[in-house]
Image (cartoon, rainbow, N blue to C red; front, side, top):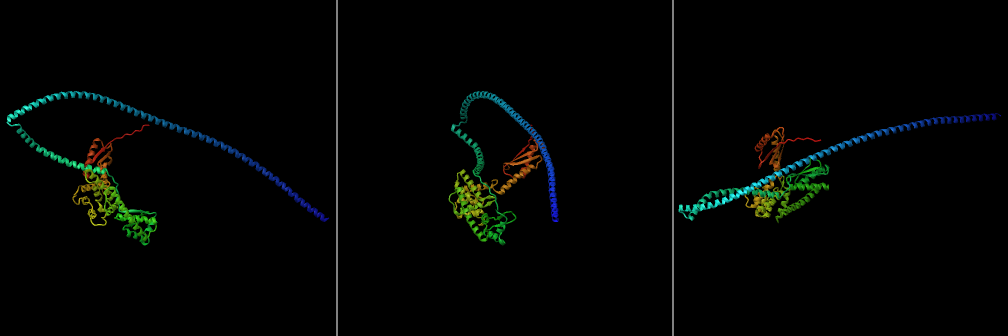
Length: 538
């Protein structure tokens, strides 16, 4: 019985526990449903509010965009109207300008027609006057013919009377008259001879100037600047260390094999080669470029490349000489002289390349010889070889004239060529016409502006001095030296210099130039005074 009661008690406790759990579950489900329902309603309200806010924002944006679009349309309309007004104004100005030009043309045409009418009337009057003069001339001619016939009759009668009075016959009278005429004409003939000699000297000078000008006009050449250094570019500054080598053995090897000075300083990516002998300098430059390209910089390689550069240089010198001989057309020449001519390419004098100068002299001499009927080929040959001594003056003692004479005699050149070489600097009197032509051509080639750096520098200094003299005067605004210094144009300030003062200023500048500067020929001084007034039509 107790067991039954105990079982029943346990069953009731379990049942109560289960029932309580089920009730708690239902209560929890109810509470959860209530909470979820509340949150759902709240979320729906929030979503509705967001939708309404979005619609309101979209409406505001639409209104703002509409306002901005209207403003942009108004602004574009204003700009288009402004452009249209500007275009209309420009068209109106152009129409006015064209009408004004047409009016001016009409006025000019009217004036021209009036002038033509006046000229036609004047021509008619002149024709009438000429007709009257022609009639008078005819009448005068008839009168003179009558008087001439009367004079001849009187002369015949007077001659007869003179013969009767003097008691001389016709032959004796002729002798006396001829002797008197001869005595009177002797002085006149001497004067005529003197005038003819002076005219001949003047004509000879003008003819010589004309020949030189003609020769210069038929030939033109470039100018080459003198230099005693060559610059070799480097790929980078590290290459300088490789050129120097360990303890300087590479740079010493280059200098020893080429005979030049290698200057390595702070100049970025560059090495300077210095030497008075352009041949050695060119060999060193080519060797340096070959070493940089090869990358193997060491004494044995340096010797190998120097030897190769010397062979290439010999070939180039010969080819250059042969080209010069071919261009001048002087015929066969000794091979050693051909090589020496090629060496002139690397020789300069006051900045002028010796080979270019020799070619100029050759062509100038040939042109001058052709003008006066001399041997043109021989003149070109003498002109090309006149400075041949400069190709060997680094190796032989004496001036380039003495060296050139020795070389020409050694290689059995023509006597005319030898005479031209020895006399082109006035060291001795020329014996041939061609030698004189070569000397003249040498002077022309060396003295032309820009040919030599020294002459060019003096030329520029003289032009600068001319402008400085003009700028010193009060009232001068600008000054320009023109036509190689043969004319100076001075622009003055019109508010400071009037017309009368402009004449005085030109005279003062002329006197200042004459006192301060030495110059060939004449210098024209022009003072310009002008007033400019500007207005802008809108």
